[in-house]
Image (spheres, rainbow, N blue to C red):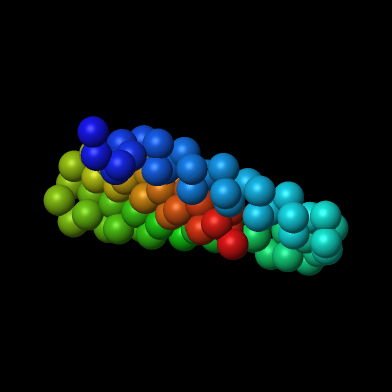
Length: 98
């Protein structure tokens, strides 16, 4: 048998090591500063709202141009929200790795 571990086990080992590292940091320095948590909440809000609003404006413009009711508005609002939530999820994942 080879000494290589399956990818799931490698990911589990990295996850456990990240958790241990965060616990050590918490033991040394305590919780993150309130302003850093507040900044994260603000950036998540902007990450979700901005693509959604841009989708609404673009969809409204296309609906007016093509006289298509609310087809493009609804579609692009949904796509913008999906993009915003995906960006927020990536930002949270990045924050957890630090």
